[in-house]
Amino acid sequence: MTQPIRIAVLISGSGSNLQAIINHQKLHSELYTIVQVISNKPNAFGLERAQKAGIKHQVIDHTQFSNRETFDAALQNVLDKSMVDLVVLAGFMRILTEGFTRHFLGRMLNIHPSLLPKYTGLNTHQRAIEAGDSEHGLSVHFVTPELDEGPAILQAKVCIEIDDNVESLQNKVHLQEHLAYPLVIQWFAEGRLTFQNGQAWFDQKPLKCPLLLNDF
Ligand code: GRF
Image (cartoon, rainbow, N blue to C red; front, side, top):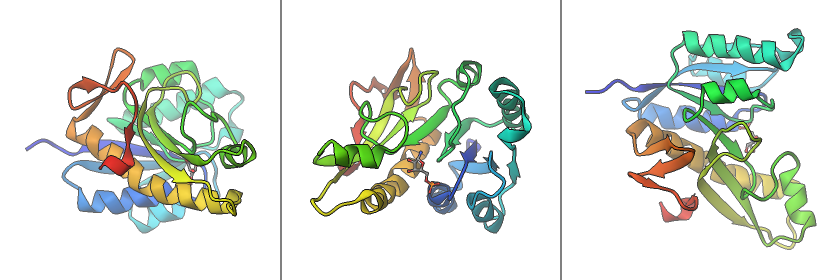
């Protein structure tokens, strides 16, 4: 029997996605192990979640580094020492250097709260409401050097109702995120999801467009 893959989860805040992954991992411990949680913010609530779950966790505070390159080098060093197979960005609010993203190319995932390619960057819920969009959602994608532009793997949509505000929309998206992210990690651990020649592949086929959560 093959060993579970080793994953590290990087956070900056609440860590509700981390919690969803922890809960899912308990049911699928044969597939993957969360070997480490790293936060760039000392007060991130996700650190408490990791502690409660008995997962090794540590702070690498970006304010203690003189530039992006030295911070990323320290982060890479820790991840390499832990021999991680997959790096999972879960609300990790740092732009990563090209060198770092290339080092983990094909083995780093991100979750972004919009239907990419719409609304890369911040304030996605507000921007979707202001644009008068009827639907919004999330994307899980492989990380490439371009911000929020790596190949999308899975998306989930939510409807923007007339009485939605940023908070209510964020809550709806979060609920879907908690289903989507563990599923994508599971696929990666099962070997169903790979990254080849700059594309996401699922079940031996390149994904021409992202999968939809509602189909699973
Ligand atoms: C999520 O909405 C995710 O899409 C974005 O940051 C948020 C993190 O939330 N990248 P949490 O810390 O997992 O609760």
